[in-house]
Image (cartoon, rainbow, N blue to C red):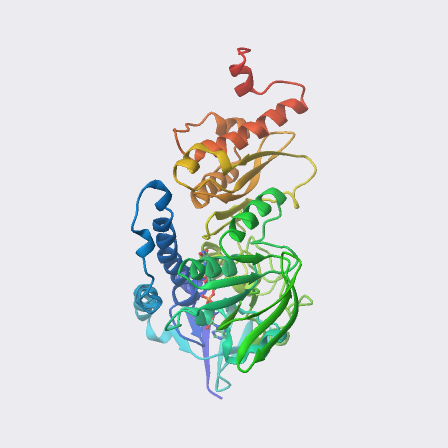
Amino acid sequence: MKTQQADVAVIGAGTAGMAAWHAATQAGAHAVLIEAGAFGTTCARVGCMPSKLLLAVAHGVHDAQQLKPRGVDGTATLQVDGRLAMQFVRRERDHFVATVLKEVASFPPECVVRGRAGFEASGSGSHRLIIDGAWRLEARSVVIATGAVSNVPSEFKVFGKRLLTSDDIFELETLPQRLAVFGAGPLALELAQGLSRLGVEVCVFGRDGKIAGITDKSVHDALAKSLAREFYFDPDASVHEMLLEHGVPTITFRATDGMTRREQFDAVLVATGRRPALKPLMLEHTGIALDERGTPPFDHTSMQCGTSSIFMAGDCDGTRPWLQDATDEGQLAGANAARFPDVKHVERKVPFSVVFCQPQVALVGTSIETAERNVVDGFVSFEDQGRSRIDGQARGALRVYAEASTGRLLGAQLCGPQAEHLGHLLAWAVQLRLCVDEVLTLPFYHPVVEEGLRTALRDASSKLYARRGETAPHLAAAVGLS
Ligand SMILES: Cc1cc2nc3c(=O)[nH]c(=O)nc-3n(C[C@H](O)[C@H](O)[C@H](O)COP(=O)(O)OP(=O)(O)OC[C@H]3O[C@@H](n4cnc5c(N)ncnc54)[C@H](O)[C@@H]3O)c2cc1C
């Protein structure tokens, strides 16, 4: 069998893998990038970009329809042409994919390998990868950047060709009339609301009441209430039966009103999560430790698996399944793979994710579940927040968490207008280790949604001072004590 050598082998040419290849090459290593599927990345082909394009059309239609009570007529005649809308999504998606393909084409050809990689063995000082079962690549270090794949539990296989995942949805020529969506995570919510706003009758069935990873009850309930106004939404669905009846997906379930319902759909979107694409790698041949799910434990400050010269990056590591983290992890893993055994550790950014449904969701930093008891919270509802009301977006809620002993901001959970922007402000404040009172000394304009954030911060500040038997500075000023 033919054998080639490299300093660093990067498995997977997605966002994380490409970042790893650049970092390893910049560090002076001969790095080889291996890709089994299509170039172009999950983000551009079937992920962030087409889903946001679909939502851009959908939110546009929805916003226009909301103008009628504000004296703007003619919105009733708005017609969504599903075929043209999907063509638009694919056309713009192809633009983003082409940008990535151009980048891949700029890599030296000897550094890019087509084929599926799996470990043959790891010995002293090197790893042997078998590519497509046909030839061998020997590398000093390996970066695993194989991404994640849609997780389709076996019970959904009954729907046969009517079963869709997020990988299929953007290829639809026309929109279905009725769609069942399983899952209430970020992808399910974005796709369900996007399609619903384009005129598809959508029913969403979640499990265990969970919505988009939100653990704060008030924020969770505010989002559930808002979504349920737009389409059938049960985050804790009780499904009795799923079958194909004369080729038509048929689902029997206990509805949110307590009644048993039997509904038929044109298609079923299963968005019940994505799992790391690690199985075909045959990691058991490497000798590194694997947990019960077959995932290697790794140090998230170096991306190194144990003390080995194997590094993880991106969605395949099962944590932070978001694009910017795929890039950060790829850069870190690639640089460390190149300089192994001189591995460097970095402080990771504050965890931060956004869901682009409306109201948007943002999760920042440490959630109240993982925080210690030494925590104070601050809360605001957007239902009567000035600017949100002006914009017809008065829904949602925000809770911030701060360390009780110091007032340092720890994190936040929110759903509401402009959550993507409020989330950034909060993520920056948390990462800069700002205290609640320090943020309150910063400028807030009027009328803006940031005033809602200020209300939550003031609430936290009041609680922090109350714990010490004192009056918060903003209250003291209001009552003339300072
Ligand atoms: C519908 C959807 C919407 C999303 N929206 C957002 C969003 O708005 N914001 C956000 O931050 N994130 C979003 N994400 C998540 C984001 O897309 C991912 O975090 C990111 O793309 C992960 O990049 P990656 O490099 O880890 O994986 P990928 O880009 O999937 O790359 C992995 C590559 O490895 C290859 N591969 C796998 N196994 C092998 C093997 N054995 N040998 C060789 N090659 C192999 C695969 O073919 C693939 O090309 C979304 C995801 C989806 C699905």
